[in-house]
Amino acid sequence: MPGKLAVGSVLARSLRTCLRNAPAFLLLSFIAHAPAILMAWLQASGAWHVRSLPRLRVLLLLIDSVASLIATGFVAYGVFEDLRGRRASLFASLGASVNRMGSIVGAAIRLIFYMAIFFVLCGFALGVVNNTLPAAARGPFSALAVLGALAVFYCRFYVVIPVAVVERAWASRSIERSIALTDGQKWRVAGVVLPLVALDVLVARLDNQYALAYGAITWWVLYTVGTVVLGMLSSTASAVTYHDLRLLKDGVGVDELAQVFE
Picture 1 (tube, one colour):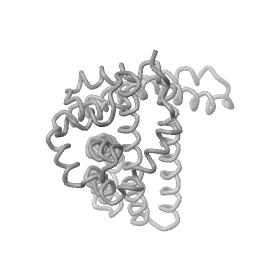
Picture 2 (cartoon, helix red, strand yellow):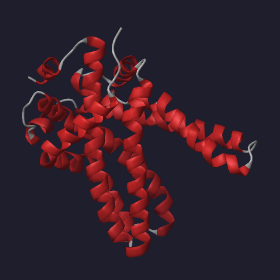
Picture 3 (spheres, one colour):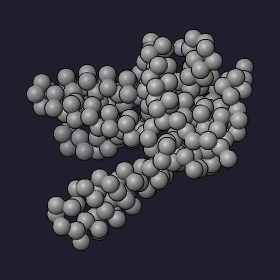
């Protein structure tokens, strides 16, 4: 019977890996998120008509979600190199991800599609249930329901992109493998995901407060910094989680994982 994912170890090693390879990983995260950063600039600079802003915000959310997954593909090679005790190379990481870009983008788009359907259904269900609850209970119930949905649904797909990168699997196979690897570990994976989600929400709130106080351009600068840094950390955590799950489930270590890039 496989052991359990060590949540604290995953988070600590992810942070150390980011710090050791910050220049390369930050640039990789910036490259992956460049379309979202450009869209945010168009919103902040007023280049888009005010009537287009609601559609722009939805488009920005979609692009940012896809970009975050692509960033995971960009940094995966560097994470495995770091876990082997080697310095991550910017160009080697880009080269490894470009060679697998079809698998990465296909898996990312499929995953975003599934997530969109799931959260639309969750929103509809919450709306129905909340109508039967007292007003004071609606907020706590919604928060618990969303956390539960993240743990049960999203965490099963948390290593889809590392699977696509390492195993060269296409979208459907990547999703199947992620579900298999996280089976029995969902709440442990949730322990990795939820602190990162909480940090993302906190940064977004601070961005909005500064936007109200100092203007849209300040919001864009903070959005860019937060997106790149948190994208780096989240991508690294996903790759480290994949490494640990492969070790627990399949007995495959980092040297064997890294061999697929050679």
